Image (tube, rainbow, N blue to C red; front, side):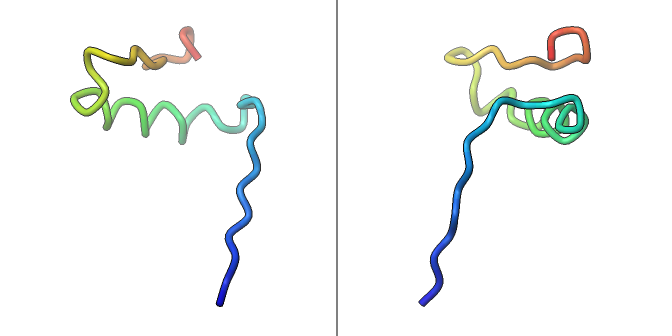
Length: 43
């Protein structure tokens, strides 16, 4: 049996590219309930 460890922290600049890629791919899933950052300026 394996145990997953999840760590919650504030995003950093190193997370920007991966985070923005994920939010851009999930717009149709989250709209209209969530407006996540889609650009570097919004991040």
